[in-house]
Length: 508
Image (tube, rainbow, N blue to C red; front, side, top):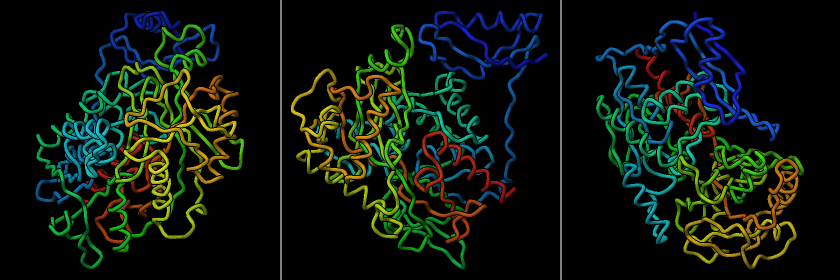
């Protein structure tokens, strides 16, 4: 018989093979099928840390269920163009192929291998390629991150996302860890495998190919316009353009594609010693455990503040995509073995902060902060930094303590209050000591704030109906984080699957 067993626990030093013995006691027979469904760390009692499991087991050989995708007949297959090769676009492409539809994927940037070289050049020299950087290129913005796959959404497609990542080379535990992460190094290899699958199964990819318009007739998509003039005939267009495609947003808005403002968040990256985070979360035994993370929320002021995209054992990276603006992000490899921990520490931005009702006003707000940071730090994509203790004391910083900033382009001491609107800096100042009450040492004097974290999510939403299509024209599908329907790698990929399914169902 097949059983699901929940809340099985092991001490942190015990081997997972002991779980099989526990299963055999429940089965009253040898365990011939065993699968971990969920694994999380219970750190509530630092003197008694435990791994908690949910497992599936049986006294018989069991095959894992195989997903079946109804296939569109070849003569009915539509011409599908997917704009953007981030998680939403890539997963949409994979699912379409499994339905028998081979799409054309267009990407303004470069293949991930070339993109990595361009990003490393920018980190080293400050020479920015506006189409090949941390934001643009194959794999999307998440390629230079921690590769976190946990999500706050509970969509049934999330499981398929995790299984697909493992299928294309992610570590096996990605499927069952409570907080799975691939790491930026592994994620690049997964992206390359996804590309190979697409090309080997009839799909096409065009790099250096930017969406610059659409042609419609009688409310129906007829063609996609790329690179300023070339037309590509298309029955369906998936807008998986990411949260930083500002020129594309402007083009679509100018065409009359319905979109609206969306609230987002801005702030800084905060860096601590990873060892300090480990000790605060796990106690003295932290060194024997995976690098500790955290997730904090504060309502100490009228504006909510929260940590986001926490990178254990990682670095703060230059993430600009426009000349003359400083943008930060966090990145970790799979090992998470760098000296510092970093996280976005951001504050809610309200629509009234934008100053008008134009759909693109949020972009103008982001850009103003990014340019202020660039100017304040002296140019060359250096980042403004300030010690947490000096920020809370309203003093200028002059030297670093235990925490040395990891930002690759260098930094300059700048008071954060000189960059942010008063409402944002006041909310940050209220949140840091409040968060310290839940994570000892968060408000450490030597912790470093690096600005600005401005690309947490899209500042707008491109509207779509229940059929997932834009009211502007039949055949246009806003999709993923950039269009306002996701908030990270997993939810963006799941939205790509959802759109692919909707397209396929039209032709079945």
